[in-house]
Image 1 (cartoon, rainbow, N blue to C red):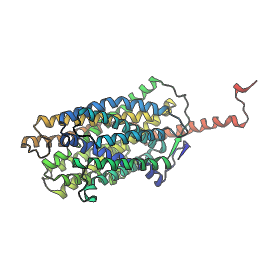
Image 2 (spheres, rainbow, N blue to C red):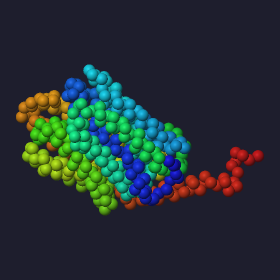
Image 3 (cartoon, one colour):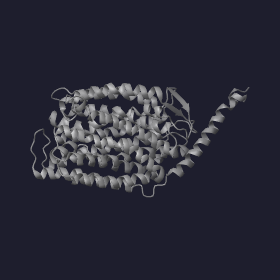
Image 4 (cartoon, rainbow, N blue to C red):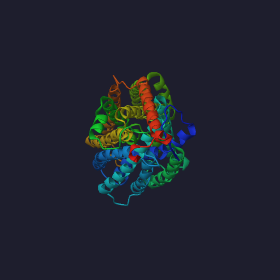
Amino acid sequence: MSTIPAASGSRLSTPVIFAFASAAIPAAALGLVLGVYMPRFFASHLHIGLLAVGGAVATVRLIDVFFDIVIGWGMDRTRTRFGRYRLWYVLGMPILMLAVYELFNPPAGVGVGYLMIWLLVMYAGISISTLAHQAWAANIATDYHERSRVMGWMQAVGIFGAVCLLLTPLLSHGLIDPAKGSSMSTLGWIVMATIPLTTLLVVAFTPERMAAETKKQAFALGDYVRTVTRPTMLRLVLADLLLTLGPGTTGPLYIFFFHDAKGFSPSVVSLLLIPYIGAGVLGAPFWARVAKKFSKHRTLQIAAVCYAVAQTALMAIPAGLLIPTSIGMFAVGFCASAFLLLVRSMVADYADEMKLEQGQERAGMLYAMVILTQKVGSSITVSIVFPILAFVGYNAAEGAVNTPQAITGLEMCYLFAPIVLVLVGAAMFFGYKLDDKRHAEIRAALDQREFELAEAAVEPLSGTVPATQKG
């Protein structure tokens, strides 16, 4: 566990990156449950209506929006011997574990109020830990392409955690199945056991760079407003929102679509997520390499077009064909793996630009903005898609028989929304200027300034007496 001076261009060892990325294992498993299984658990197993579940999630996410901004601001102002991001990351873990216990082990007869309270606590813990982890990643990797490598590892390791969750029906011989409400408590205990183990790895083996700052830590509203309203950041925020909304719309619909429209059993439906999520293990490093040749924003646009093609092909596969559907899911997941990886890496590049201009660290606030878009995006998907399903007459109750019209409405939601949203998100990067050449100039200027500040800091040791001590 160490706090080290800032340095640019150094390549992190693979063991260090793996230890740091291990935090993505419980985060990805928890995100999968929240996005795919938890809405269905409350709607069907606990008999809370679709509209009530969608409204609860949307309300909690809107409240949580302000929490992210406050935490990001506080994180940027923190300087301790234990580190800046390391401290916040550790603080978020107990909050997260408590919420996991309460949501995955709800008492009988709970209602919307219980769901809202513990979702709020859950997302508070997720905000703190995720924001600290992503800002910490930008801190330990300062090179344009090294950031893609670190973010790629984080995504790949997270995918491993999600795949392990999906394999629980096979590994447990059917005793644990995420698609069954009776398994939710066991899944919660698995996540809670993983969190302290990965936290220990992250804290013990990951350094944190503490760079000198040219200005004192003071709240300057104008600086923050300029930081988040610059055209570069607005592009990143809007694109991230749309790229989150795209694949995100399929999450709450996933079990309904593949069970009722494609004719697969619940156990097979869970297994079909393995090629989709597992594709990121290959997709993340692939897109990171492509970005070295075409830059991050161009690579993201290429991936978006490929995603649209793959999603269309998946829809065209006839119902009940397991192998072709698995291949289609792999293709969609492979393309989608580029979105989070590249946007998060570009946010780190923009944080460097703002640090050069304003003289202070703004990574916490900037990552709060893009995490905010994830939360808004996921809340919109549930609160919009579920009412649409109710409007077309789709019945989400276990064992319900739906009309052909309701199934058609389900299919249209699953097909068109992701494609349109992803393509519009990719279009946001036409005219984007912060490429590898521009970032190299920014890093060179930052390194020079930090070297000069470090030199000035040690000058009194050479015999110069500060003016305040004379006479």
